Length: 380
Image (cartoon, rainbow, N blue to C red; front, side, top):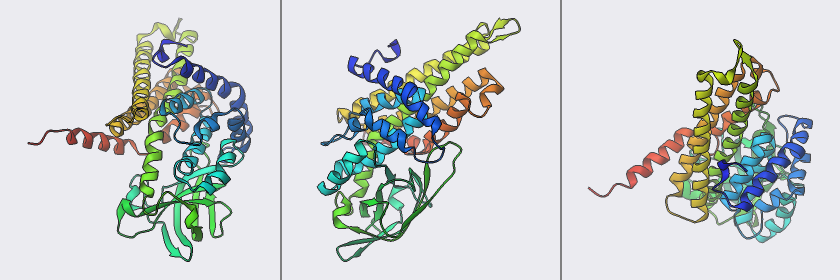
């Protein structure tokens, strides 16, 4: 393992190597055999078979955030789509793991951990994504439970997931304090959906809830406390979005360096031109800085240190924007061939764009950092 990961423990470096090898040799062939825009159940089962899902969905609490980042970087370096399948499965399962009723956990977690069932995290709505407190999907009391009415949009794995962690409003006018999370099986009456085609091949869609019944035992956590469930999940996963971006950025940098060393122009390899090599030097520096920011934020989360919200926001912001730049530079070095459909860099170009939007757009991350800066000022 190179000096890029010298700050990791031997066990974490071993985990990273294993994930890179699995992504390259096992998962990527399954990705290529799958259908873009749809859940790849064979891939999900392989993620379970090789123990990655079980590692993230162990009974008793969260996976270490640093380990989550290591797994996501390793998978993303050789197979971004398999990384996304892993991350989305864990994201949708996590609320059930940490706050679901015992019956819900017993029924679903074994199948989610072995990849034979597919989960989804249903938070975003057509009217907005980052403003979680304003969501409008209603959960109205009905006998022994609730009736869910409304829509969700841009939900990863929808409408093909088997179980959804759904966030709905149980108390009107209460903002973030009036939201409850429910575990809603796909077979529930009144639940329907459709696929939303994206630039990338990511499986994502829209859900419609037409009076979907959910019992009180399907609540994930307490009534009106769903915002905390959502934030606990996002706080864990936000730094690892940066790790996903770092993995893709490293893949792009590696490809660009190899191309510059072997491609000849005007009688010299591209590596002889400072206009090329200095750009790559800047990219390498930003990628390593992003990696360290991501791991520092994850380590702070694991240690339950104060200030983790700002650290996570910085990590996601810097890493996703650095990755976008890294892939853009790599494409520029390669030239037109990198824009051919199916080229590795063309795939990365489509995959990386969403990282600056989901789980809090870059603008939201900047707002978080700015607020934290001014909150630290001493009283006048």
